[in-house]
Amino acid sequence: MKFRQTLFWDVDPRKIDPRKNAQYIIERVADFGNDKEARWVLNFYNKKLLKKVIAKSRCLRPDTKNLWTLILKNK
Image (cartoon, rainbow, N blue to C red; front, top):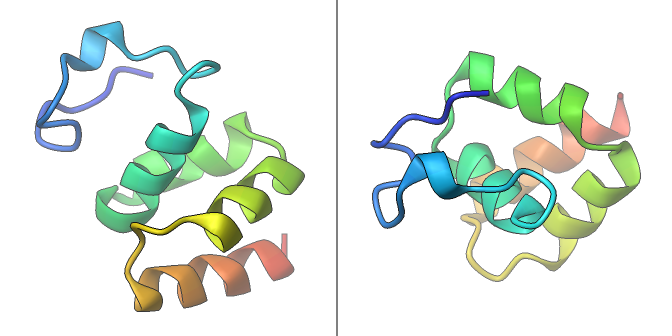
């Protein structure tokens, strides 16, 4: 997936590795991503990893955590 500069404003999106930077990508997309990016994250990463990142994240907003917890509960 080609990442938007506005989503990853603090790094060069072309240098992001989806495997090595999984937590960073998941957190950023969960908080600021659009529908297309959210669907990509849900399809690319396994449910176990997504649940772990969302549950342990210290940077996600509480509303974001609640929404993604519900989404992953039904996935």
